[in-house]
Image 1 (tube, helix red, strand yellow):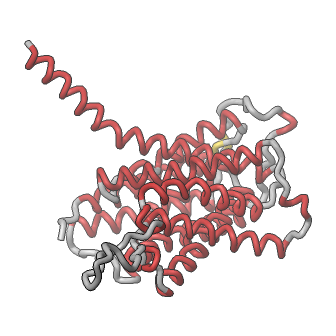
Image 2 (spheres, rainbow, N blue to C red):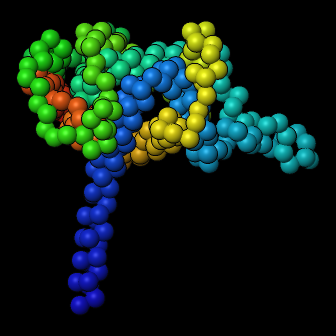
Length: 359
């Protein structure tokens, strides 16, 4: 009898463990959805984009620091090597912070600009000129653009004439076609229900610069894809992910702060009050930066790097539904058709990726 109970308990425990990774990734997509909706509201109400990104980076740096101190203490706290030529038990410090050479510093600085600050600001500008449900469609393109960029840089190979290669090509072509469809065809606007957060006279302003916003979002997609090959080089030059991420966040925020001050020197632009702007910044730093990063890192360690992208399409669904409910955003037929095509292309691509034989 006790053996049966133990077997049942083991099965329940195993089932619970199997659901942890999917649940973590669903939570990540909800966090990104919340980030998108909050950012859309504060930007549409006039918040300066460089101010938003600068404070976001500052809070992100603060919230990542405890993880770096806890998980990578050896970087900050130097260890000591025994001195064989002396009776003294310890001698010269060998802290891993010394591993940060000029090469690693240069790549982290480049990554903070091209892979972090630029795509974030382009995404904010694209979000300002379009809708949240439209902007998140381009997130589905990032894995595909990353693959194309990796091919150009010869970091990835495309086995032509094989099932894997054919599926990847079909997936990329479908996603490109879906992006073109959603960019150039709107169709009928569907208002599923009224907003419950915004009053009728306080609706989030409707974007009037669809083409300009699309260009910003395409730029965001490309520069976001640049993050992955650059980050792979950073990991080799300085393999301490929390410290490198914190440094990237800090330097990216410093860059946007300097540019923002040049563009707008009015002190009121940089003031924060106890309002939705502060909530958005704290939420972005705590959840969309620190919590999201740690959840994704844990899932990659458990299931591999190909697992997290499978959940990206959920952001499109969550944002479309919640954006319609809370912000009263309309969903166009073009967005539905184009988004479905992009998502289909992503899954076809990931299907081909899953069929790769390990080297």
